[in-house]
Length: 466
Image 1 (cartoon, rainbow, N blue to C red):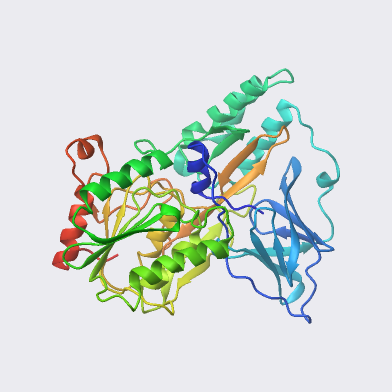
Image 2 (cartoon, rainbow, N blue to C red):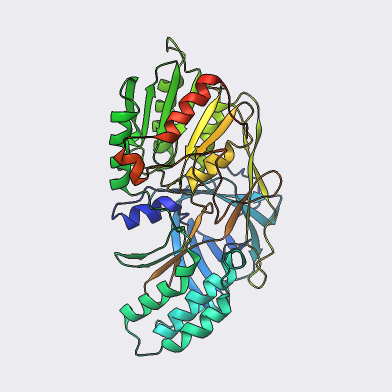
């Protein structure tokens, strides 16, 4: 069961391989627990599961289709591993008819309810013609996408406009173009139409995708301009994390993604080990002087694992607190109905921590897990100030759905809620202090206004708390 984030979207658009991104710690089933073998419906997410004889098989369902999804094999008590190394944990919850599912690089869990058999549609082949593909595509969004109202898109009118253009003789190129036109007005970076190497996606107007090329250009600019007089400049995690000590006793931590930390090893355990190695060095007890304040630069961040973001947040507090709550759309006919919000907490890490002032730099190229990490710091005890521009506005894990003709559709179905119940989907998380972020003028004049503002805020011990 793949759980994609904007890292996959951004890197696919950039023509790069995407790091794996998924969910949480493995829990071990006890021998006396009810068996989890059988058939299950997942609350929300439009999926049913078959777990039998050590094999885990996902089925992606709508009112008009059932398509075989991803699979995994049992690798331990209650644990299953997918071919790309994602560890899934299935755990009985009190009785034989209820269970939960976790993936090892995402936060939270999914509730499972036992069903007597797979839906009838799963026992017969799905038609693969253009009209059937169109119908499954439309129905998938109809049943799962949460943001049509906030985006001002009438999805039923979209069907009425485009379905007459699709018929048995519609070519693959023509269908790909139609599907892209249908979702273009959403300007949602977590919405993708994929056909082999072809990717259609749109970001929020006025923002850019955090590609590898942009990341390299910005990193070079920062090293030459902002870190010219810095000490102990170091790269970690295959260059995705950079740290330096700034003059005046402040620290600078740049994070360009929450994944891809361990090269070819895409397992969550490998990502976590590399992250801990970086944090132990940056905040370690053997340092002669720890930073008085910390700038965390997320302005070019393609997302990745929400759980890695929570792991960093644990190094930035000595008091437990609520990061956010997570819910998913849960009624195919009613977009206002959701699963019960599941709280996600930040608890202090055992290792060295920084509990002083933090300045978080964000912009329109702060995507997905970069945004959930930003949101996780909003409730952080202590001084935390956000500087720059609003984030992209895409928080959900991404549902990767297979279409009958071999194309794929990616879409979100979740919301991340603040303590007061607010979400930032579409608009992004706003800064406390607004500054330009990597504009042409900033580059041309060799300015980094957001960085300079952060240095001054930390130096003066001022700023606004989240």
